[in-house]
Amino acid sequence: MDIIKFYKCLSDINRLTCLCLIHEAGEACVCEITDALRVDQPKASQYLGQLRKCGLVTSERRGKWMYYQLSPELPNWARAVIKSTLDNNRAEFQQAFIDFKQCQITSDTAVSGQSQ
Image (cartoon, rainbow, N blue to C red):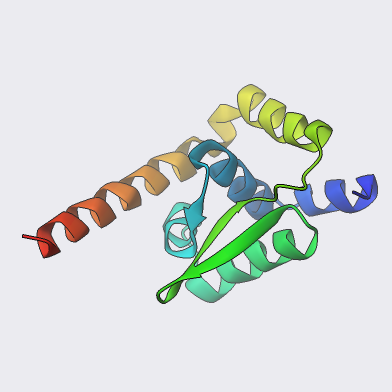
């Protein structure tokens, strides 16, 4: 991984927030990122596409939504930078995490309601 490319990808607060959310959750749907960042779906997809282009995340389509995970090829040092950034700056991402979790609760409730 190119170290300059890595840090350039992290230089935007929205891309950095996406990466921290994905790191914390293990994976994230573009719909969850949209709610967490309070942006429209095309904008969230743009941020996630840039992270994918940088090699930081991978994506998988499930139905109409794309789900993102940290790239399995991401070096340990890069994972450590993401983890350290999140651990030492959690307040910076607090509202995004609240909105992200609320979206997950809402999605889980809707899915369980459909199966009844």
